[in-house]
Image (tube, rainbow, N blue to C red):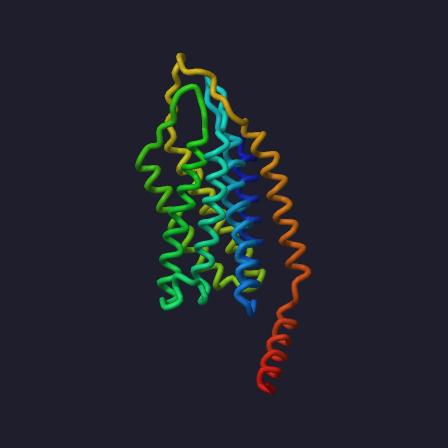
Length: 256
């Protein structure tokens, strides 16, 4: 499909990662567990659903097989989006001090465990998405490419979680999101580079959805997710308002 698919995939991933990092910083400033959980879920939808999953299927626009149509199974495709969002949520939630599974552990250990689990799951999302591919034959994945893509996923996830802690201002979130998008795209295309297709003339025509039938609703939903998050961020109280609310709450607690 040309370089435009690669550029569009990277831009989509960068947009999702930027909005997600913004939600992470908002979550860190929330006074209650419920508010932190809500903003973390929005961050997971943005990074996992848009920055990772939608980017994957935009990249698959450029995947074609000479001699066979390419179709996609619905069940593994749905599983792949659940993995992407769930892994991102687990990693981001692990960094928060009130995470139920890491309360007694150090921030560094939470970062490492969350990053490794998130990286393995993101790589799993890619290969779950690839398992949805249907052609007149079989797809093989070369082990060295799989290993490198998994390594990229773990390193990228560790970097993403670390950046989510330090990228406080928009000026730092922009390069952070660009770096995260580069890592996500690198994982995808490293995995694709290791694909070998074995066609069989006796195999039936593949059944399932076309990539465009996946992309159209996926792109619409992804755009809606980013639009809703942007509106919520614009409507959310500013940092100064939050600080005032904290001071008022502390003053009232002192009087009580």
